[in-house]
Length: 264
Ligand code: TMP
Ligand code: ASP
Image (cartoon, rainbow, N blue to C red; front, side, top):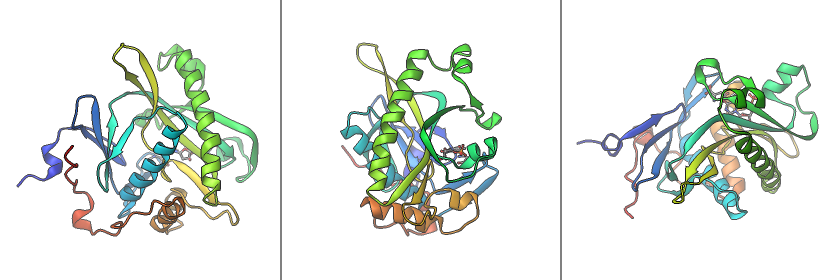
């Protein structure tokens, strides 16, 4: 018997997520895998249940952003590992917003990790795995037509709004939002206008989150830095946000099996 996963048309297979054709035109199903990678796929492990946790955490964050008027690709969560999303044309720029010095910026500029930045910094990275997502400026983006000046100014102002809101949301859960990565897409509406929408996911895979009191790490740096306890950290983020799902400890056989989406 064909599994539910193989019956559906695969649109894109990424490092941590797979996209399938959606249940209605203009939609896709976003499946969250347990695959965990770092350093452009040089390091890879399966962390059982990670995909489930990211599905629930990202759903919650996208919904809260929707509540304050941020347009997102999220429609609804279908099951433990899948979301129904709007099909968009992904803009090949990753925006990173930084509130505290950490990660690649600390290394690149020789700065000490943990220093609070006076104002949030927004950086652009060209989304290209073969090149390792290089840092670029808006000059590169306009010259090579990756996005228009109008789109870049829209993405920057949305990202700063998202940053302010998420700093508060995570503070309410006792977590500091150190930095995070966002992706946007172009959504065509009925009038053929193009709307900028937040896409991809927001989860401890794409954010740095430190405990407010102890600075303990609750994000993918646990994996990048071989600290261990990554799943427990993600579970704690979900618990603090009030979205810890049951069934996270499902076994290896069911791990990467898609669950048939709910019938409309
Ligand atoms: P960086 O310090 O390694 O540049 O990462 C900045 C933020 O972006 C951090 O919160 C992790 C996130 N990020 C991703 O989501 N995907 C990536 O491929 C990279 C390199 C970082
Ligand atoms: N997401 C990237 C990778 O899979 C890098 C990272 O998150 O550190 O390699």
